[in-house]
Image (cartoon, rainbow, N blue to C red):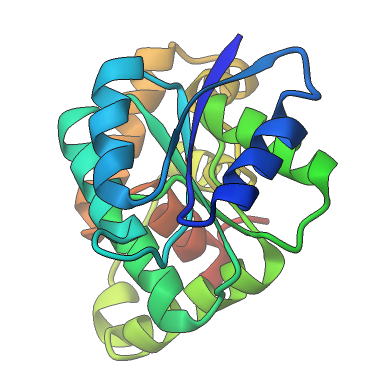
Length: 214
């Protein structure tokens, strides 16, 4: 059973999302919160697997909630579900540590699928959101082309980058490349250090930007 906490400042939306998610027999909504601080406090109590987090909420917004949860409860996945897909809000969520970012206009079944994917370790970003992230990374990397061109990758590093870009988690990469899961975990960590990147999402975007996802 996947335990979910929903954080949204509009009560009818919290209740509606709860009803949508619990249509699926594998999901249980264990708590509701009206802002980021309450989401963090209730996460400590209810230990959800996934927090479904709105971004713009009064007093304590989604970014506050994401950061607080990730700092104290790093095993909890946070999936942003909001109406805003502007660059600033998306970037704020990603920098805070969000594991995914989808929009409220998404169909009910896709929201359920996104929750399950994030729970399984796969970062989920809507098309428009992904383009926003890619656009920002492209701008940043255009300033660093000379530095980036100096990087060279082994065949194994390229394989790992390709599979990360395709959304594979460590276990799936290990199975695909016939490696131990620990070896893959170390390889991903080394790539993050090598490229001075923060997380798998940035690694995936880097791979796509530089044609390493082919």
